[in-house]
Image 1 (spheres, rainbow, N blue to C red):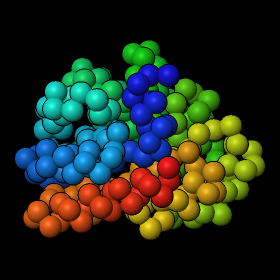
Image 2 (image 1 turned 90 degrees about the vertical axis):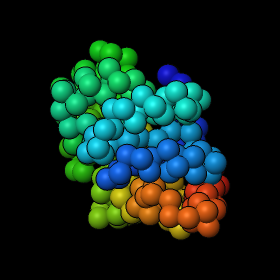
Image 3 (image 1 turned 60 degrees about the vertical axis):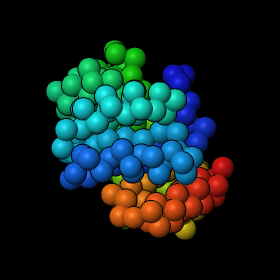
Image 4 (image 1 turned 135 degrees about the vertical axis):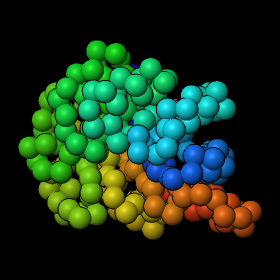
Length: 207
C-alpha cells in the first residue's frame, strides 16, 4: 500500500477542492490541514489545477495531494506528470484505471450502479467512490456492502458533512469524500475558525 492510499484509509476522508479562483486554494488547504485532513484532491476543472498540485506537494510534503475529476487518460497522464499522488474519477473508465495501475498510482474510481461498482474493483480500482451517494441513500449502500460486495472498499461522496459522515461508515463505507462549503474559499478569519472546527468534527465522528 502506498503512503497516499494509507493516508486515505487511515483518516477515512478525502477533501475535494473545486474552485474558480486558484489563488484561494492555499488558504483552503491551510484550513483543511489545521483541521486534520491527510488527503485531498484538486479537481481537473479547477483553473490551473496542475500548478496547484505542484505547489501543494512542496507546501505540504506530508499530505497526500491527488487529482480529481479525471475522466480520461489524457487528464490522468498530465495529472501524474504534475505529481498527483492519487487519482479520483467520477466515472468508471477501464483505460484510466489501467494507466494508474501501470504507473503505480492509487486510483479511486467513481461508480453508481452495482455493475459499475463491481467493474471498477474488478478492473483494478484501489477504492470505489459511490457517487452521488446522497441520491442513492444509506439503505442502498448497506445492501451493497452487507450483501454481494462486502469485499469492495467503498467511499461515500455526495453532500457529506460533519452531521452525516458517520452514518455512511455505519452502513459499511470505509470512508467519505467531502466538498461543499467545507472546501470553498475562506471568507474571513472567523470563517477559517468555524470551518476548521467543522472539519475536526467530521474527522472525529468517523475515527
